[in-house]
Image (cartoon, rainbow, N blue to C red; front, top):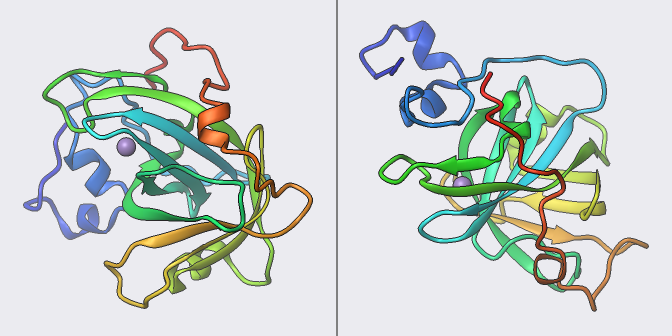
Length: 196
Ligand code: MN
């Protein structure tokens, strides 16, 4: 079902309205999904998206959804690298398992593979939602490829400016390792349609 701006206020305030409105769930293999407040350590994923322009989608579970950023150059584990992270619409937490091919002509057409997955935690006091709203998330990622401390922040206060993802110095930092080039593979086998 398509939701549009004509829908009620209640729908307009739902964090997944933008996600739903961009997709036709009769045609895309992506999950429709729903708001899902889970217990336990929040998850993160990075999905390599072979769309018109290849990019890496970073998603952190915050407030019952996956807050999302699109990284045109991908993440880096070299602290000297500052990688642009362009905010994208919130995705449902069910999207964290998604791999597949979005058919031509649809939003995000192209192959999506699960490049990394794991859990994350804030390195500072406070709530993730507040950090996100303020434009600063200092996080520890515990993934298969991305591990250790990262800063994800908006260098300028404007809502529309891109964020940056920077590896912080720690034992997991590696200035010799170009992780997107050296470790391109999916962390899971492509499954049968896992539409849910
Ligand atoms: Mn994408």
